[in-house]
Image (cartoon, rainbow, N blue to C red; front, side, top):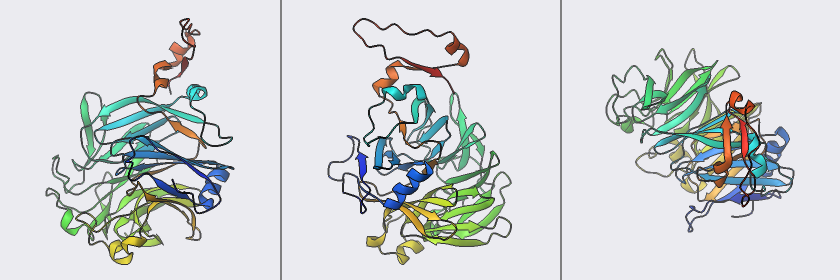
Length: 390
């Protein structure tokens, strides 16, 4: 780990699976540490090429970056009670269990205190559907099933439940017809999605990807705007529609009525992964290289490869200035999802094989009312955590 470029110390917990020839080297700016600490926020970010999500947590003494391994980590959806992470073949569901906090390992940051503990509850096997963005619409988890060109939800006994597909896609087939990738929720329902093209041919989006991207309204199927370059991460925030025009490396506003697109900020990376807090936008950046997928985009012409970087930038929407930066020099090259956790300053995500799960039990309120203290065997310390299921 390299030292950050400012006085704010950064502590990185790298998993054993990190390639020894390229460990994560991360710089966290003083501005990023300050805004996380002062606004009492943390960040959860997925990095699919590195197969991890990382938690960015801060206090007055510094910043901690904690990595949790997931194969091809992609979409993230989070609430104070629940967390969902999409990976190569599964959707992983976690529940916040504060009763387990006293049994977590001591934080690797002076005076830090955990205030959320997400324990795994369910792994739903979807198969390799190329899951992309995820979001809670009300109490229901929706996700983009890119391979089958649809929006879907989970269903017991099935790999997924198709709920909506673009009107130009006439049926389900696992060959990524239009590269559907992002979804936006407004007023508790899915309102918009992004795709690379209006193709209904197998991988038909590839030839025109740099200029045929679009935002589509859900469920009507009305095309709100098109001519974008590989767009991602549509969001409704502050009553306005935002999108990352990724192939341009920009954060943009879309007039949902006229379709007019206006750039708010231009960045030195492939913009993908977006969340907001107050007047701030948290934008993920990937260090893309000229290849079959990313070649020919305006970004690769505008910014030299040596000047592109991977990480997260925080944009002040009132001024357009960059207020904070996380930058990876190695070990991580592709960011997918960026999720602000405004309810937790130092959360923890427990891995699926952690021994803490042996003695952590989530019960219904009725069952919890009947529970008694557990008497441990003489040779074992009593360390059973019981909490109400949320």
